Image (cartoon, rainbow, N blue to C red):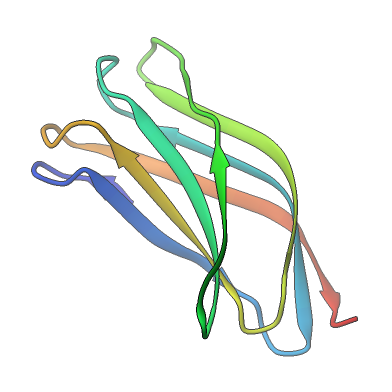
Length: 112
């Protein structure tokens, strides 16, 4: 998901858990390839048909390299059938462009 000029928020649906399954998230990572002067925040939203259920914030770290800003953390999130995960990345600038990458990893289990 890219940032474009005039845009300070980027978002993308990461996954929706299929019927009969539960997704156990064990890790999340993100990177924003932005200028060093820009700050970013990384959030993962867990949503159901009723709206947002929970928000998980990843702590960003500036790398002072071309990668710009990164975040990675172990997590333990249970995402039930029909629920989804969405990545939201915000920055403190409206200028410039750059790609953003967010991944979650874990495993699927049969619904308990």
